[in-house]
Image (cartoon, rainbow, N blue to C red; front, top):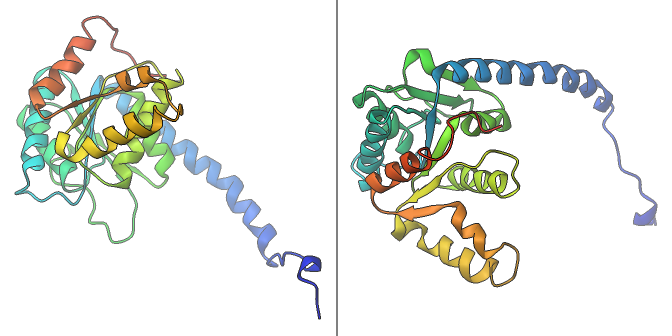
Length: 233
């Protein structure tokens, strides 16, 4: 009987062939960064708005996101979203209603229908790599406004907090909209993370929680009365 401890990992015969593909993928990644940096720098200061792609047009957060984006653009900011449906569509729609720049950072995914109809044609950037796309959400965003969403929304929210906390980016305002939705998460951060010492109490100041879109926009505007508008890293 063979001793399992003596068994060695079986490496597929074509394993070494993937090395060539891996090396050349670096140039694809570089291309995504170059396009993103070039286009977004020309667009100017923006606010990234996040939330669920599954939010219906009839949902209260859809209407709130549309209104928020309109108010953001009326203050002179462009709006960046992931370009999809739901909250993203609402935000792009609101940006156009506010006669502001409406940016869509699309991602190639199975079964996706492409960008929503409210992304400006001049401000479309499509990505293959999630990590390259995430960089673009942060680099030229002067603030994050985060509506109820799923894993992707949480990913962007915690990415922003981590980068600000570790001073890897210039600090910028992060606002959660929807106390009913976010209360459980905020309570867990306060009662579990702080109690266990995994974050500091001061880290709660890295984000704001509100139900008022006007307050969310005002938080960002007030921040830039004392800080310079510039890329975050």
